[in-house]
Amino acid sequence: MPTCEHCEAHVSERFARVFSDPRGRIHACPNCSANAGIAEVAKERAQNA
Image 1 (cartoon, helix red, strand yellow):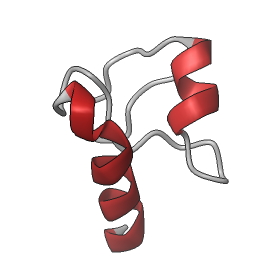
Image 2: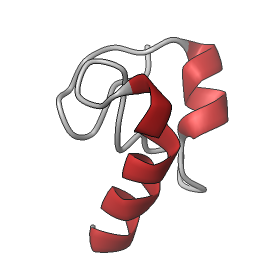
Image 3: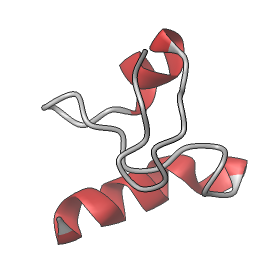
Image 4: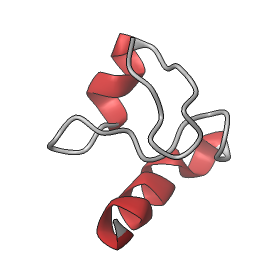
């Protein structure tokens, strides 16, 4: 099961397909980010990683 790189929470396969980076990493999830900003947070964390 995929996990968030930031908080290590498990996320669904569907969430991972939509919000993972090109390497398959998930930088933000509903557990550690506001739902409305997940894509923005993920993009920002990926750029800073």
